[in-house]
Image (tube, rainbow, N blue to C red; front, side, top):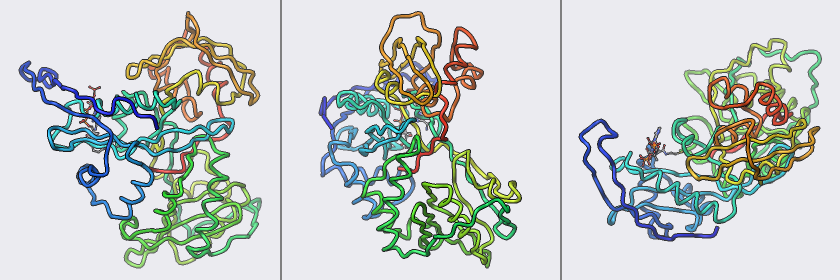
Length: 426
Ligand SMILES: CC(C)(COP(=O)(O)OP(=O)(O)OC[C@H]1O[C@@H](n2cnc3c(N)ncnc32)[C@H](O)[C@@H]1OP(=O)(O)O)[C@@H](O)C(=O)NCCC(=O)NCCS
């Protein structure tokens, strides 16, 4: 990744008035610069405090492989390292199947001794200036809290639903196939098969992220610290799908916790679920899947998989609107001028999007007004992957449109046949 402004000295002035106190200024010098080998002990200490867990050597090695020093930015005050952000070099599948290289922002933290003084904002400003200078059209992240990243132009693009079913009551419908083909795999067999199956899956799913080799190294290392008191991983393997799961044994009540379940075909998905549900001694099975899970449709009682939680796994921020909007396919014809507002990076403006529909691509170019729809960078990033609709955001007062018809055309064009799914938390 190209680096710009290797060192910028920033003086932050925090107006106490903003905090409701007397209007005085508290100024201090913050340096934002590229990370070095020498910074890593302090980076790990900072992230340990920020995320509330000591970071083991294995995770350190994986993180350093995924984020070479040129992908790391640190903030220092005097000789103290007080902030960090970094990125992994990832790739995301957009609707229509194009693969786009994207930086994945991660390990973001500011010391609790220096919070709410604008250090995160300074770090992200520099980081995104570098993303733009390197020509990245989009960046992605997984967020620790939902309230942080909207202001930086990120919108949630996937929703994972946690479902728990009482396995003892599972009955498959007569119409549900029983294709078989699932093997109990060893870790060595899983190492050979899983990355390839995942890679086939992620290329066919909008929003899915490529898992780098170093990420898989962490999966198979399966350290005790990742297990949360449950067992080491078990692997169920089909040629076109797999599940990895742990067993939690609490007071003789055994529960299956699925870590990963990916299938390239409905047949593989069904076969893997048949095998999971045949684990007689297990009481419950918990899994995270997208909104349009096939599971309830396989069962005589579709109410059995109970949704017990939902969370936004992946967030995205479009950096180059013409390029990203010309990269995906569209469900219907559109010929629209719209305005994107971007308070963080100033990449917004007025654009013209023309699409042929029926799954064909589109052409997006800068244009002159008047705009028929006005939308923020964050909301357009959310809509882009098809999980969120312009109409919903407009009803919430977040999008302006000249008419309901314009909004409807927008939604029809951006609709995706497949529900987006991220595939990777990082
Ligand atoms: C989140 C964190 C990095 C913020 O750092 P910070 O230096 O205090 O943030 P800043 O002062 O630069 O704040 C920038 C903006 O984000 C807002 N913000 C910061 N933390 C926030 C939070 N947790 N929730 C909501 N808004 C937040 C600020 O109010 C500020 O808003 P404004 O500029 O629009 O007025 C820091 O609290 C932290 O390290 N948290 C624990 C680790 C973590 O969750 N990291 C994020 C991983 S995805």
